[in-house]
Length: 236
Picture 1: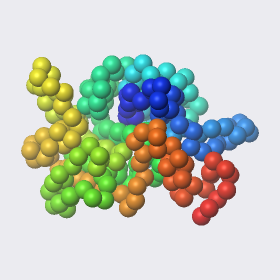
Picture 2: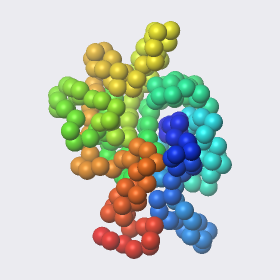
Picture 3: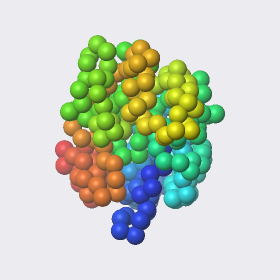
Picture 4: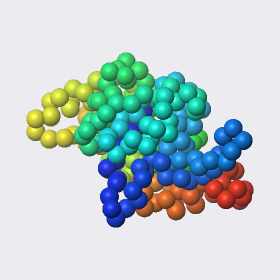
């Protein structure tokens, strides 16, 4: 799953979808083309063994659907679910009919290094976790019991979970629907309270950007991390 749901279009900010920020180049049928930020997430998911991608989208993300279409040209089936509500939890629930009963790999379209998807997935499988997420270095983590405390700003782009967490999320959302919108970090707390095996992978350095104003930061990271660069120079 790649949630393309951010409401990041405004007259004072970058007016194209954040997911489509041009961060590097690629060769397609002999022609040099722009490689959008979200494609890094997709490439990482393919290498990690993901077999199908669903993207919850809102009305600002038509360009995302036009670019990826059904996924044939990039090598993985992609489907779309319209989600008119804000937040990861609502986006996940909108895809319930697709993800029910499956291991879910959710990648936010702001990662700048594709290999971190495999890193988190392999850690999840190795530790037989119910939920695994990548977090920033300053997150307090207990190696035995999982996450002690996590805020939205500390979660950094890759989330893996088993079907039990999907059902817990849906159950808690239905319970709270009339009163308030539940956040993803609250769902992590619910998972810990339910004695699920929740694990965290600390990234060694920042490999995630979360808004369009970070475009230059994303390009700089890619220049440090990849051989194929926006200016065609390998700095490694």
